Structures are given as C-alpha cells and as structure tokens.
Length: 205
Image 1 (cartoon, rainbow, N blue to C red):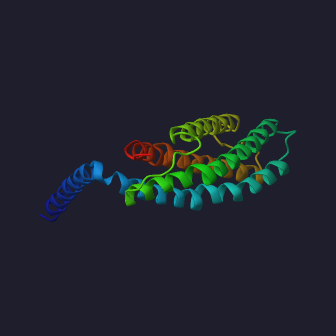
Image 2 (spheres, rainbow, N blue to C red; image 1 turned 45 degrees about the vertical axis):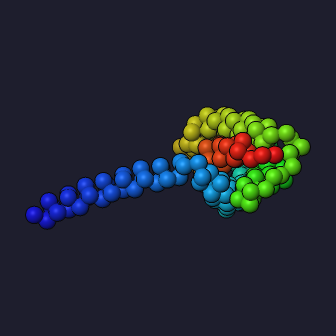
Image 3 (cartoon, rainbow, N blue to C red; image 1 turned 90 degrees about the horizontal axis):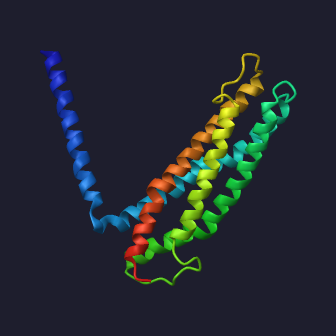
C-alpha cells in the first residue's frame, strides 16, 4: 500500500511538473514578455559570465602557464604545443571579452532600457547588433576549435600513467577552463544574442 502511494505521488509530481513546464513555456513565449526576457537574460548572463568564466579565466591562466612551465616538455613534447594553444586562446579571449564589455553589452543594455521605457535610441556606429554578434560568434567558434585541439593533444585531458601531480593538475585546470568556455558560449549564443536580435527588430531606431 505504501509503495502504491509512493508511485502515485511520483506520477502526480511528474504530471504536475510537465504541466508547469508547458504553461511556463507558453507564458514566456508570448511576444509581450520579450523585453522582460531580454533584461533577465542580460542580467543573468553577465552575472554568470563575471562570476564563472571571466573570473576563472583570469585566475586560471596564471596557474595553467605556471604548471605548463614546470612540467617537463622534453619528456612530453605535446605540452609545448598545448602551451602555445593555451597562450593563444587566452590572448584571444581577453580581447573578446573586452569588446563585449565595451561595445556589445552596453548596447544590449540600451536596447532593454529603451524598450522598457518606450523610447528611441540612436543607431549604433556598427549599424545593427547583428554585426558585433556575428563577430562574437565567430570568435566563439575559433576559441572552441582551439580547445578541441588542446583536448585532442591532451588525450581528452587524460594524463599519462607517469604524470606527476603538476601534470595532473594542469590537465584538470584545462578541462575546467574548457567547461567554463562552453558555458560562456552557450549563455551568449543561445540565450542572450537571440533575445537581443529579436528586440532590436521590434524597436524603432
């Protein structure tokens, strides 16, 4: 009897959650909530990027470089190539994030504020937000490809049997870095950018 009760309760909860999901999906897909969603996506995305990827990138790049230097490249020559790719991708991502913070994010914030207040904004120097977004997405692809190369060179971040502690920590940090990079790309490509593009189309410039 108790098992029957548990199963019934489980089915009820599953049905309830599925129903809630459908209602929320319909609710938030409505056109009038596009402004709210953009503001929410913008604030959450920037917060997530600052607290996760940006902080970890700045902190881990020092750790990764130190660890690469300490691990002997003569015994494992692939580390020399890994080190080259790591330095390259960190340099590219530093510039990438600078452009987002100085150009793209301020304009997205302008879009959200203008839409919520029902006011016009001056056309940006870059013409349409699709232009910087296209550039950011291309840079996302390049960074992702670079880390795929690093992942391949490191045998999917698997240290060899004779790896010392520094070697293992190095691969662990690289894998964490890749995870944060994927999160960064997902938040922007799939959440923030589509909402910003849709809102710009609705606003009279």
